[in-house]
Image (cartoon, rainbow, N blue to C red; front, side, top):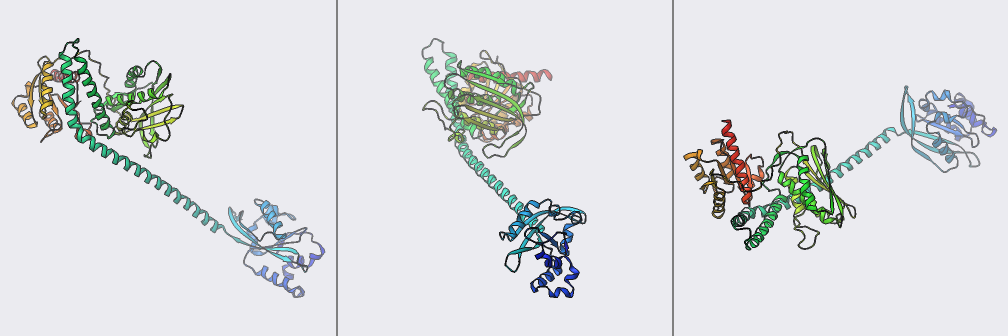
Length: 567
């Protein structure tokens, strides 16, 4: 045994001598010692387990067996007197309290005590369990304690490793659950979109053909009747109702992401700046509009008309949410990531973020998750269709972007549209407004249309605009006319949805066969165009007005002239 030399009281001399002098403990003289003490000494000396003894209530003497020595390292030689605070300097406060508690009979063990042990010159954190047993004198009082020490380092490490593994598994389970929730929400949204898309797409083509005849007839009447004719107001009422029906169909198609887009590259900053004048007019004098744009251009590949419609829809909602005077702020900035929105995974890449913030009443938290649903509205009867934000949602999603909304009751609402940037630098300027109808001056147009009523209107409208017209009822008739004499045609104007060869297939064939002939496609709705927005052809959506027809024809004829000059 290796003691720390301590003065001990007279009653403890025998025990002190027996414990201090291991040679004497093994001598014949030890046979005269009490049987219990001889048994204790034999156990201590021969035990392979690290042991130590604290002896004496008032002034404690500590003794360590040989198995404990490696645990002390060079601390044993540096400790003077009763300096256990040197031996266990890193945990002495806990050890001292535990020893005092053991002498008082209040504790039997001290588990997983962390100690910095010096083994072979390597200092590392280890964990130990101290198990105490009292040594009592003849009166039964605790005269000392014997402590068996067992290392628990591997067990503690395994326990901590298990805890970390359980935590990791728990985190993985949480992420898996969140991913499942996302997948379910995306599936629900996808099923909703598919159902609305099938319903809308199934009727949109025929419905827009009907609206084309109505809208076109209204335009022709207004174009030919005198301005003072009192019947004009009834015709204008028909036109206004037709326009509302057209917007409803377009918004449903946009929400279900089946709208036929006409993407073009343009500077988003320039487009928002130009649109801000229209938004200012729409919102009225009681609402101040503020626009903050970056100093450099942000090129995007989007359908400019759909973007304008989306921003106007948000602005109109902001106007309706503001009671009295207020402010609408439009901010545009470039971001490199899109946060997770409505359980969707976050997106990385270069995006333009357009934020529209108002100082209105805010959105009730109970309905904020439903605001993009078709026909959902918090406005009164007749005050809104519930399709404005549906168009915003569908357009952004179909453009591979995201839309987020933050709202606080009584403070206002902030809509943020995240739209992908493009690397292309060849931007197209916003077309200038045309003052009146542009005439064809005898240019020849090949019209390809299978619907009798729509074909009659298209032919009549083009002739009214001073174009010569040749009508083909299907793709085969159109190809026959072109093979007979393609040079007489300045433009081909074709429907998309037709029996047999559709308009998109016809257009691609004509482009390969007659590359200098400008091609305009028209459709109320086509799954083909919705799936392939990059088809590369000019698209005029049904129902179109007489003015829109005149503009697109003039632009196409101009392309033919440019091609002829280059040739």
